[in-house]
Length: 529
Image 1 (tube, rainbow, N blue to C red):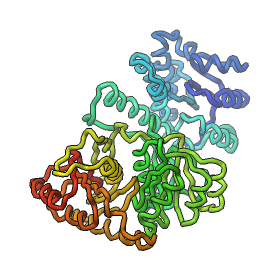
Image 2 (cartoon, helix red, strand yellow):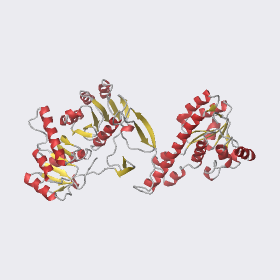
Image 3 (cartoon, rainbow, N blue to C red):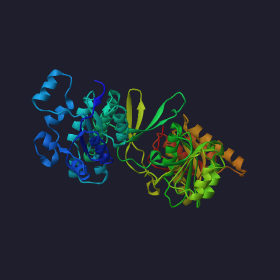
Image 4 (tube, rainbow, N blue to C red):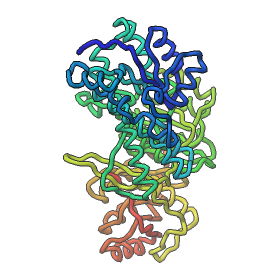
């Protein structure tokens, strides 16, 4: 079987976008229209002649419409193998009419959940008849055309026009694939709601995921790797995929990954004070808060101007013209923020390749959720690292008490180190990162690298001394030995914030006391691999 002429169509949709135009075109071509409930009503109101499903089956709609299409006279017309003599005989004996085209989309389960509906309403929006018709039609795509997405109506029009009112097997196969993906996504949303929302399970016995492909990317981390962006079906936090790309080249795999890192960090800083984050290869290379966004930009850039070249910039407040103009003075791949004024947009427009991404709001850093990582042969899941530490959570373990400014700098550094790859060391002073060491195999080297970066930044800026002098230093995990702490002391740090919990904590505390610095334990670590 190749081409199948469309003579009879069953239309039953929750999303009625474009359904009247589709039905009108079909009716004009002489196609018999069969429909249900609200869809039939909408078509009749448009002046179209429609046959009710209940007229086909001989049974009225009952049980709130739950069983209206679950009938042999419907599913026989969908599932019959038309060139099979036994099937043909059964159709004739039982007066089962063939259905050539099925246009169905399902009850809005996800939208109902997102609306905050009560449990009973959510359960009532689990479609049964719709998925059954979709699956029956898709299985029998050798004879039946199934369309589940209103965005495919235009392709259907073109197909019918090109083939004298018929569809090809290639088209039906394509639509069948989309149909099974649609029902799989639908069932996945339902099972996820039952597991996570209804049953409050963190790690259910079976986990299904439904995603829709967004952009196919030019390549992955390297040109020989293929890549694509997939978006979750259902509610998602505001993130890079939800941002409006105002200008610039298409986003690459690395752009998306780095922009996500920058956005996650900048969201840690409330909008009552402007903050700027500069990220390179998913690690921060400069972070600052200041009275103005422009001041925050210059302070963040001064931390490591070498690494900032070709980096990702994120802000926690809408971008203004002066800041945008300053950002364009160096090569920047992506800028992301919750808005931008006309002057900022104009400044960025002069750099046509720069990708400007604007969000309605920043993601909530304390939001719950799961993170996923692939490994050979499986997937690793964990809850998001949404841990937040405040001043009241800190335990002073040194003889010297920290000053208010040291505490403020320590908490600032702690936010940054949370988003820096392990082993991570971050120096901060006056709301500005002074040096960042990331991704080393031991904490001592991270501390030394951060100090070297700080020294280079001071030399570039012409400062008398590095900003690590008088700074607070954050370590994402405990110091297993005193050498990492001593490296920080050598760099001029006067305050240490770390999780604690090492077998050698006493040795590290003694080293801090001998150096005369203050130290606090958080009781929480922030490994990021």
